[in-house]
Image 1 (cartoon, rainbow, N blue to C red):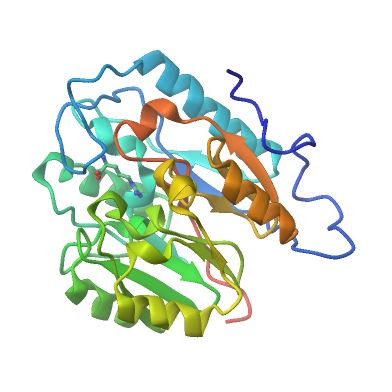
Image 2: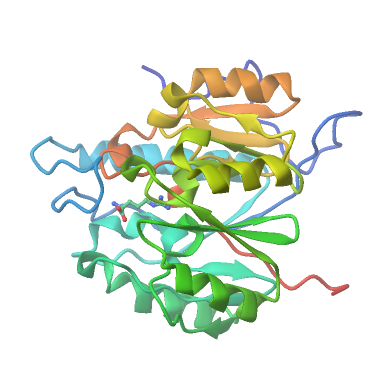
Length: 294
Ligand code: ARG
């Protein structure tokens, strides 16, 4: 099958072009990615990983390159961190940190298999000139911590410790909303919820505790509620620039819901990386500078 954009009927357009007269508008982003040169599935730290099922490492790189190319075509900047041998999950750059207002909070992984990724990402943030803070608790970066307007949405239940949420609020000075994840298949917040723009999110209600679901309903009454079939193909592990939403091509139901709301879904096939339990968002860390006015 083709990996090129079968969801959207149009070619990807530069985000820097004139916004549509109505509907969501795009903002140029700066992303950090890590080429999956050493990608493999040889341990199990989430229910998607099965070391007995083969992975096509060459295809993983080609699929990742396509993702990177889509971002560049949309007018975004992509930085790269050097992949390290022996760290097969390092491709999932979202787990490398949380970067908001020019401040980078480094990570502490739950699992020893990923521990050595943390100092590599930390060193990258230092070199790039961010103000770096060290984590006090298990904290898996943007996998569990998503900026939505002025709020930080923070997942817990599987990876990031609840105690880490208090540190987030101190470091970033933004209100933190704790969201309790309850389904081990959706072990990181970014597998169950996607921030579409400053006001809207898409999420799978079933992945959250009753209280967290109620909180999400209050905060985002207009949210897109995803269906389990789309979440199962990592549809919510999507990257939105406010208008274009890059998501797994298999999530066609969610793509249709997005289109109805004026977003432009762009499908990408990351079948190989999915074998490690990751999708487009997992491969992408957003680097946010301090806003001049704040
Ligand atoms: N195998 C990796 C892990 O379980 C996948 C990480 C996916 N990253 C994410 N942001 N959801 O840690």
